[in-house]
Image 1 (cartoon, rainbow, N blue to C red):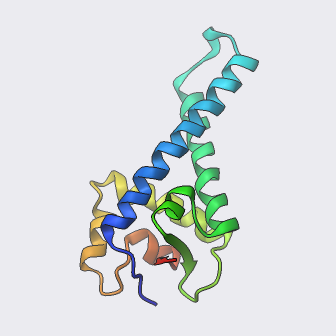
Image 2 (cartoon, one colour):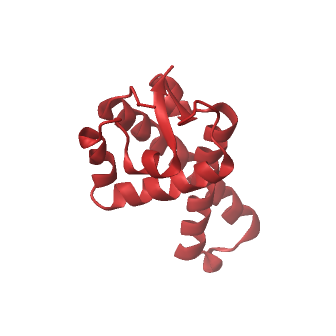
Length: 134
């Protein structure tokens, strides 16, 4: 199956979702730190892990339960399996990890979409998912 979502639309949804996901993560970290810890016990590893976990749940829960995040909804995009069915938890985990990797290597995983015949990114291809317009 071929994706009909442009790289620009995909990146628009990503930027929208990053603001939402990190806002949620920082809120959760702040509440946990205020309730359970004193200032001396705050450390970068705790903050990183909390941010990663809350961001993971924002994306994967949205993909599995509704097929789209808030950013994807705003940009008119939905995620499905190559067969057209809803994404599984395993696919969401693989996609989340590979999307981070795709971004951290200079965005090449996303740029790959411009050269792929099916209009897929690395994380689409390897997680057997794709984005489609609603």
